[in-house]
Amino acid sequence: MFVPNQTILAGIPTATLQAQLAAAQAAYNKIMIGGMAEMVTHEGKSVRYTTANKSDLVSYIQLLQRQLGLTSGRRAVRPYF
Image (cartoon, rainbow, N blue to C red; front, side):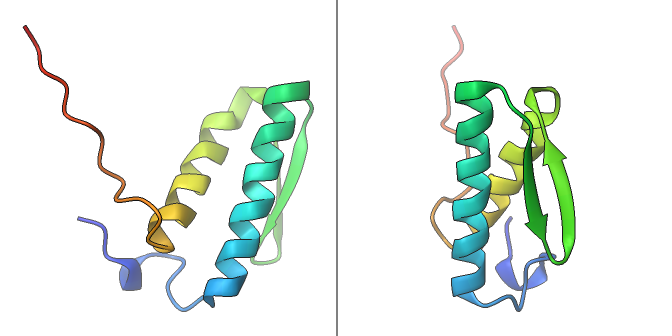
């Protein structure tokens, strides 16, 4: 179960999280469209994302979205036959 006040993002102001989410989503968009490397800065650390490690960027985006309450983080249940 996701508990927002127990994540590494706990205590960061909502406006800051929203700005970080926008930057991460913009970087993801640039990677997907142009395949170029993109730099994202989080808490004073910069990470260069490329198509090779875009799954890390997706995980970061999902964490920000859950922290902001934009998604539950749960996957849809699919029936198996």
